[in-house]
Image (cartoon, rainbow, N blue to C red; front, side):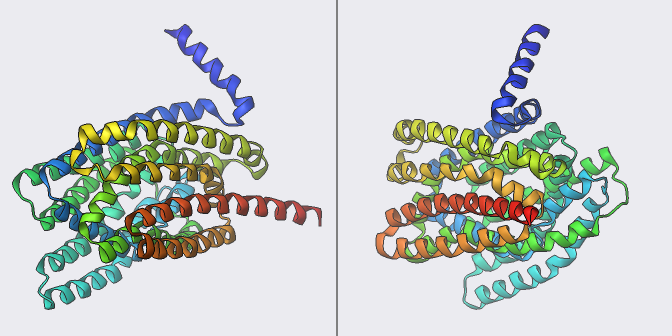
Length: 426
């Protein structure tokens, strides 16, 4: 066994001269991250099968619409605090965790008043289901978001084992189980919303308390990183709109049934992105520690590896997708072609190292350019895509804009690096 471990270790060390990456660190953290993602993806897949068999398309579409509304409204909380915690705790300011928890709760008073106002509007217009949903969202989402900061703390501590078990596995399996039990009892979307937010908040509180109890954070708070988080929170507002505008546009222009078909189309590609997106969480603490020169030395190798990996995954998925849907989602065969098209958006993962570098080194200007430019491109493409091409036009627009967004990030990285070199010369 030791011989096998040593052989594997030597292989990883050998590969570092080509990848320009700490492969030992990546393998250690990646093992837990990928293992957890496989379990989460499997549970999400099983839950999707249950939704496809037990719940009507209209109910599922309404449920997804409400969750998108919740995510959109959640942009008025301090979404950038998670990154601030990673930076601060990495530098010894462990008290930033609890400071951020209560700061987000206080800030969320605005969010609660907003959801309350929307709730009253829906009650006045005799839409009691959405009225109740808004109250539930207003009461539980701020607490849920605040408790999830424990995962940022674990990331800063490089405790990927607990992060994977607590945040990814337990944090996803418990709500999924509660949702599954709910669909055996009722078909009303409001109950799925209530169970979703209550179960996520409950498990979040339990795990937050457990992590604080294990680590007993000191009282040191990094105010500078908290201030930086306000920039990230503002950028997060635009990012949240981008991530959820798809459901709102589809629901508004072509209805809940088409929204259900769309959500089943993007479900598997979105789950495939999980391990790749998890790379950002792995490399962020490393990028914070390292200097610019060291990071940039391995940037192109990381991008190339992600590009080749994405192409291989896309090719495989396009081949197997029809068989997956015929076996597990026979009611959603219409989703196959949309899902195959959307899988090409996986190419956007090549921008992960560049985006993570901007965040780690507090490169505010490139982040603003990237998020605002990407937002304008995506909103324009999606609006005209759904208006002129229906669902197929929308999916094509979504796929193209995600790839364009990634290209934009890479160009901004090159521009930023070139500018820094010129500044050093002058």
